[in-house]
Structure formats: structure tokens, C-alpha cells
Length: 367
Length: 239
Image: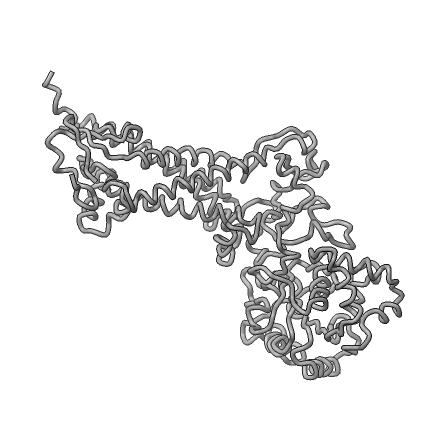
């Protein structure tokens, strides 16, 4: 039932969501989008009246973690209803139909709403050997995402796999997995990386679209700036301890118990753009750094390869073994150079004695 | 530019901008290395008072960034001087001795001298050919270090001035690799500094030309009558 008339108001009333809760949701969304408060009435109006495009949720090489994130709300929130109601003509994990009927209804939507429907993609796209490592109903993920995604109004990738290939694309990447942006061209793609993405951000992107008829501004990696516009480190509640120079040295030490900065435990907050410290997880309960574990940089491209070792500040130096830190290798180079020149100095001194240069003796007799 | 040779065989080789930028670089590299090492591996235990008191990392980062700007200003001045205004010994041409047959010959001489295959040190007033080529590598490392440093700095303010200049770096390599490069170049520059001071000392002793003091005073010594032998690595002297 896509495009049902009357907007959200009636649907929400039917589901027992009070107007008060609805307005609270709208002001929260306005805040997540970093819009000034005066935009809130526009958000309310848009959500009440907008005709809602159908939404197709496609899953490829994934762990369904983003679906988990979507379904994880502890109570039926307005956010869930927005996604649920406005959307989901097709979602493999939660839809009732199965088999050929499900595939047919998917294709019916694609035909009927060409260029109008939204696509959410979860999971990476394998491209090796013609893409045979992920097939649904006899079609490869590659073909499906190009056909369904290529005819959409826009694609929202949820999770790092769909955005950049994520864990399936980690070395040695046996299926040549890639993100959606690498195989679908000509359609706006909004990347919501994260492992998983935060459903607040997904809702906010859709609210932005429904309110303004446009997609939020994105950075050079296609991520909306409202959610990925600053580093975790710069918004972190432990930042004062970083600036002070107070660091956790090992798990469970005094600093760890006092909530000091996890920088020396390999926290990748300084490397990672995401709004986790602000929006948090599980209905705002907590988030990884808040819970005492460093960030692993899950919303950055290729995080599995580039952010590891997760418990060290820097990657190992390539070609020097896994234990080789930059400082060890660097110190070795300095020691080697110092040693080499010390030897050279001794040899030069011996040579100067054995074979003095004429020049240094020239004017001695003048006295 | 006329070469100043006075009647005691002294030649004015290093002009003021050259000496000034040299010592600013020395100071900057020392300060940047110490603060940078601390930022990468904060080994200093600070007071465990509430975090509104101590501000040690904050100050270290401030000093690091301040000296980064000073270092860049010095590099800009020295680059200008290498292209416009400087004398023949500090020209950019000294960095690429290998482009001429004569330069390659001098390069070979210098390598042989350092490997004990040839007794006489290279006779030059500016940098010898090998030193010039080494500085080309150092200039490249300075450039990479500045680029990676300001790219990392820019991450605190995406969309800002430095981000506009350096944000593209992260489309090519990931930010952890940028950090790794920034760390390793510090060690390479420290290794270079050891070599640099040692070689200057060696040549100073062997040639007795006042090389060590020349970076303070600007003057080097040549034996009277030897002026002919001291042509610059690039253009002929215009004296």
C-alpha cells in the first residue's frame, strides 16, 4: 500500500501514537539534522501530509545487522512506524511473502514507480566471477542492484558493507566485494556507513527528503554531513581527559574506572567521522566509548583492514611483521644510521692519520 | 649577484635567509619531534585531578601546530630564496646535480669520497653534489610531512581552509596510513640530522674551510689562488 493518502497522522493515530509523541519525534529529527528550531513546524507539516514513496530494502552480502538496528527499538517508536509504514514493500528478513510472489511484488513496484521509489541497500555486492557469490531468485546481486537501484529516485546504503564493501571486502576479499557506489551510477546515493548504521540517521535522511524534497548535504564519501560532519573524537564525552593528558593505560586500571580517554588503548575516535557520541545507541542508552571500549572506526571505508590492530594507535609497518610499530622501526633506522656514521667517523680518523691531506699543512712554515 | 670574496680568502656563501631558515628548521624539527612523539604516544603521567585542571595534551598539540606553521613559513621563505634572489650556491639547481654530465661526475666523486675510494673531498663552496641530491630527498620529505600533518590537522574542521587544501589526501589513502607516514618521516628526519651533523663535521675537519661556522656567519674559507676551482654546481659564478 504505497502512497496511501492522508499522510502519517491517521496511521499514527491508528497505531496509538499520541500527537505529543509525534511532535517530540519531529523536534528530535530536527535536532539530528542540525536544523535550527524554526524548521520544526516544516518537518511536522511535511510528515503529516507528504505522500510517501515506496521503499525497497535489499539485502546482499551482509549479516542483517542493519536490519537488527532497525528492529532493535525497545518500543514501537514513531521512527519505526515511519520506516515501517511508509515503506517496506520488500524486506527479505521481515516481509510475509516468500518465493516467486515476493520477487514478483518487488518487480511490480519497480515497474509501477520507476524513478520514484527509494531503495535501501544492506550488504556488499560481490563482483568476482560475474557476481555468482550472492544470488537471489536466480539473479546476481550485481544485476539486481543495478536494475532496481538504477531505476530508483535514490539509494540509501545502510552499513559499511553497502557503502564501501565493509567486512566482505576486507583482505583478501575473496568475492571482490564492493559498495553500491562502485557499481551503480547516475542515481543519488546517500551512504550511511557504520557497523551497523544508526537507525536515527536513516530516519533523519528520510525525514529530510520528505520535508525538503532534497537529500541532505554530503561529504566527499557521500555521507550526510549532519551525521558524519565531525569526528567522534571531537564530540566525545571523554575529550576533556584527552586534552588533560589523562589516559587509560590498561583495561581496568584507575583511569579506566574513572572514565579517562581510551586513546592509548587504540581508540579510533580521532580517525572516525560519525555522530555516535551525540545520538548514541539503543534509544540513547550508551555507545561504545561511553561503555569503556575504544571506537574501532566502523564507519570509515575499509575499516577492518586500516583501523586494525584495534587496540593500538597505529597500524604495523608493512613488511616488518605484525609486532613492528612505527616507533620501533624508526628507532631502528636512527640507531642504524648513528652506528654507520660512528664507524665512518672512526675510519675517517684513521685515514686522516695514515694519509693526511696536503692542504691542511700548507701554510705552517710561514711562522 | 656578485660574489663577495675578501682578501683573506673568505667567501660569503650563506646569505641571511638561508641561515635564518636553517636555524628555524632546526628549532622547529626539534620541537615538532618532541611534541609529535608525545601526541602519538602520550607517555607523561599527568595529575589525576579532575580534567578541568591539567591541559597537557592540549598544550602539546598547540605547540605542535604553532611550530608547524612556523616550519611552513620557513619552508616558504627558503623555497622563494631557492628560486628568486638567492646566490648560485642556494639555488634549486643544487638539488638536481644528476641532470648534467658534470653534476654526475661530481656526484660520483662525492660517493667515492664517502666510501673511502677516493682521498680528496669534493671541492665545492656550496653543497657538494651528493649533499644537494640528499637535500632533494629531504625537501620531498618536508613536503610529505607538511602535507600529511596538515591533512590530519584538517580533520578537526572538515570543510575548513586546510580541509579544502588537503582533504583529497583521504580519497587516496586512509587516515591511519597518513598517520603512519607522518610518524615514519619524523624518524627519517632524525636519522638525517645525525648524518647531516656528522658529515658537516667530517668535511669541516678534512677541508678546514670553516664549514661548521659558516652556517652561523655565512662565510667560508678558500685558499688564496684556489678561487678558480670553486665554481658553483649550477651556473658559473658571476663574480
